[in-house]
Image (cartoon, rainbow, N blue to C red):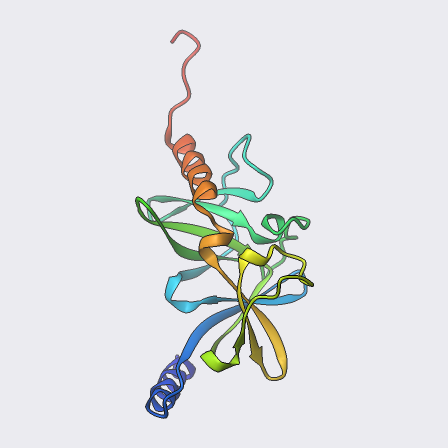
Length: 184
């Protein structure tokens, strides 16, 4: 917690100097480092307690019960067209708040491991490349330079597009609907 306060204080100093910094949660996925803006992240939980929902796309792992709410869980690796994330003791679910036309929705994403919260200056973020990455270009918000290396900053609303959200909402709705009885 002290590191977060320290980071916030340095952000305030940098803003006074005229350079804007944004905070990002970094995590690893398939050996690569990714980041998501901290403002859309609600919490990070241990992997587990998933209920699989039949007939969902490969990238939808299932749903979890998060304090009484049904939250769909997406496997980011599978969403990127790669193989599903292999669950280890460091695997976790990052709960993200995604906006759509009809409000905000919580969605969980499976990641290999969470690294740290970093501040990346706006001047240290390059535009997304049009080629050379192993994920769709529209999934990338930008490439952040951190200690001489690039971190792929994800565009959450594109990775979890409105069409996908509709599918996820259907998955959550399916979970809540009672199954019909044979005599109905």
